Length: 493
Ligand code: SF4
Image (cartoon, rainbow, N blue to C red; front, side):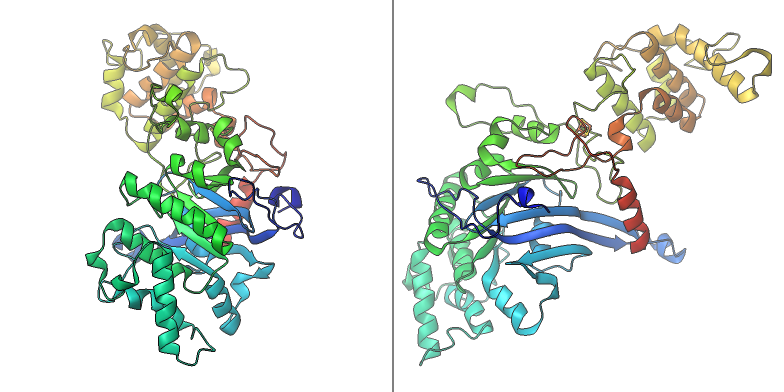
């Protein structure tokens, strides 16, 4: 990671503005370099019996980021995109597959013994679910005191038990609870109070850095604001640095200095919070912002546009740009004349063909013509076949092509909402004809030949700079990252 990317010289100290928000001009406290966390599994009993290769689930795939002292970096994205795994792996709560994490320049993955214990004192976590993260058999006092006893704190007290009790009382008061609640059990508290206990526990060892893993998403909206205010106050009071993980962008905006957006194991955009919200660059960030209600009164009437489709499986992520299966801006070939909406629909159709969602019967329905999209018997002539030396395969394809030109008008209106016309429509009809004949691979090949996008061939790279986006709509380096990914997969096996 370059200095420009990390934002600052390591010797600059962090500063705070009047808002209490760090201005992210501090030295780097924690740096993550090319972090990978893969899980390996054999899918079924048959896989195991046949000794098939373990398949990797690419939960985190090459994440790099720098967190400056005193700032809050937001890590956002939909559920299942690898945010929590990133947070837990950089704290060494999970073992990384590859990459590095550096805390004040020291490699966290190389720490052992006393050094590792010291790191654990300085870097903690607040979990999402205050219901399951607290042991129900322990009192609140015991829960908050537990990290102190594990680390033998306070080490120099004459009466350790008494000193711990005082410390617990202090912490409970500081997070808005009362010391008189010390002997109660978690089930006697509300969700917000339980999260306050979780925060007190995380603060017990006076850390410098906290991963806040969706700390308010399990709480009522009215309680969320109270906990967010508490976290902001504590950050100023204890000079804390946060990695704030959230799927709710409206929460992130108020607490974070910078935001990194994650999709399917990768960071796809990063920038200062206000800039990223005002001028999101990556189509995924734009779609995420479109899908959340806005607090500003002038935007409350705006229609909310939900993000289409589901996050693909990290077991088998799409080639090239991982967002391409959902991206409304997916890039057509340079020489193809097609409206963006129509192109998205063609790509969706191809995805469905490839996943087996559209079978021969469905293809016949879509074509809805007499002969059900059959190969156009008796039709001759083709702009792809070539007279007497044509192979049998080419001949068949040529007849289908000619048939498709004739049948294009028969594609039902409900196949494409956009106005797909002319050659584009004819090629789609030709592909469906192939599918109707039971030749799925050929149908896919026909569509790929005309419609293949740079977005599926080449993975876009997140470059350096204050507000980069990993997308082919913006400048990209000439080297390709796909080769790296292929090599890594082979090596892991
Ligand atoms: S690279 Fe292509 S598919 Fe990916 S976000 Fe950019 S335009 Fe969309």
